[in-house]
Every structure is written in C-alpha cells, then in structure tokens.
Picture 1 (spheres, rainbow, N blue to C red):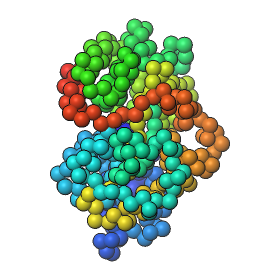
Picture 2 (cartoon, rainbow, N blue to C red):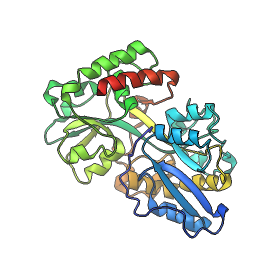
Picture 3 (cartoon, rainbow, N blue to C red):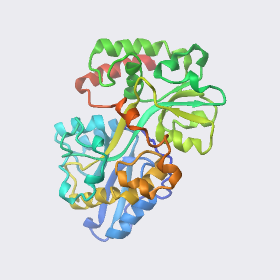
Picture 4 (spheres, helix red, strand yellow):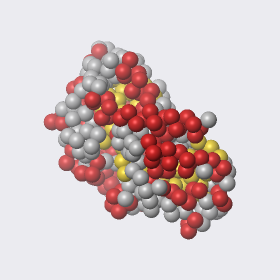
Length: 344
C-alpha cells in the first residue's frame, strides 16, 4: 500500500513517551501518519497498561531506509506494503511473527494470506487492504465515459486528470491499460508504459498521494486515480464523487503488520497485532479509514449501510480481476528511471 498517507482520521494527540514507569511498559509503533484509529490505540494502552509511542513515516522507502540504518532497532511494530516485505525479509530485517499468539487468523479472508511476498506469513499479517481505481465527478463526467484505465487518455479530459504520486501505482495503471502485469520486470514493457504515460501528460493536472481525495473535493481534478477508502471518505463531502473498478484490472494493495528484527518488546508487539485483528477493532478501522478489513467478521460490527457499500467492499469478481503489487527486485531501478523522466 505500498501507500503514502491514505487515511483521513486525525490523530488528535501525539503518542509519545509520558508516564512511563518501566521499559516494558512502552511499545514503539512506526506507521503512516493518520493511519490508525486513536480510540483503538487508547483501548490497547488501557487493557495492557502500556504507553504507545507512535512515530510516522511518509512512504515505504523512508520506513525501509530508517529501519535499515537502525539495524531494525528502536521500533517494535511497523507497517509495510506487500512489495517491501519480501525485500526486508530477504535482507534479514524482520523477526518472525509467533502465530500461536494470534487468535483471529482463521477469520482472515483466505485470499489475503499466503501471498507470494510472504508465502507462510512468517513475517507479516494483514492490517488493511484496498484498491486503486478511478474516481470521477458525476456532475461533469457520465458513467459511460469511465470504465477502464484507458479512458483517462480521453482527449476530452485535458487538464482534468489526477494521478497518484506513486511510481508503482502510476506505472501499474499504464501497464494494465496495455495488457501487462503491474509487476512486470521487462524493461521493454515498462518503457512502453512510460511512452503511454507521456501521451497522458496533457490531461494530467496534478500528482497527489498525501490526500488524493482533496483535488476532487476542491474541483482541481474531475477524474483520475484514487484509493477506494479515500473515495469513500471524500463522498461524505462530495456525494457526486463516484468510484470505478477498471475493467482492465484494478491495482490491489495491502499494508501489513511487521516486527523489526531488533524489537525489544516482541511479546507486547504480538499482543498489539492480535488486538488490532479483533473484529470489533477492525470494524473501527473500516469506519475511520474507509478500507475493507482483513477480518471477515468485522462486517457484523459495522452499520448496515457500510456492510454492503461497494466503494469499501469490492466484489470477488473485481478482486479476481485485479492484481496485488509485488516486489520487482532490481527492476525497481528501471521504474525509478522512467518515473524521473516522466516527472521531469
């Protein structure tokens, strides 16, 4: 997920070290900003009589770099998107998760477990997952104009398109539009995607991943890429905002709990992960962030209108037609090269 900030819940307080009586009373958490419901963190602190130090990062790359520099020390629980987990595990940066301490694994949607980036879920467990699709302003654009990624190239949308400021999402979109995998490591295919994206430049008005719902709400963008959770939250302010699962395949992502190798409080870290995997707490994450919960039992704790909201919960067909973002190894340098050329 792989994601720069996706949630819109406000952490109304700074989770920092205060009232700390002993080292084992503290859990150091490293996550995207505004990506975890405050009330659930407080409930964990109360139940286990601990203090949570909540530190934030902007993207997977900065998280990885900091943990690498610290040799995995300083944090007890962190979060990473699918395509970083395999890399971090391979480099010995992660501790194995003790799944005997996890009490809700049988309730996790099976399709989210045993993914290629961590086949046995030794190093990661799902936190939230979601879909990158298309949003559009229905007061300006009709639904027959928006069915696939290819529609973003429509010449009628000049200076109206928003793209996420995320190399893998943007290139994944262009690759799918041309019938390729979003995880292609073939430079010819990646270059072809770059050439296709160059043709889109006249339509692009902004790149945004910090708060990608905002350009739609402010009227800066009329159509473009969007995470389904952000579309859900923005619709509260902008009922005319629609969300489409592209027929050529949405981009699926998942953000995951990980435990850095140097964690000094692994047992408490496992309790934290298990606490957030409880269905009632997963439901609070859905309400706060607008993304589907990995725990299928979470639905019963949601208001009826949310349980069936297609913006939050894609159908099995839409999921099966999509593709998770995986680690592309050294090919990441190819993506970065063409990304810099595209943005320059």
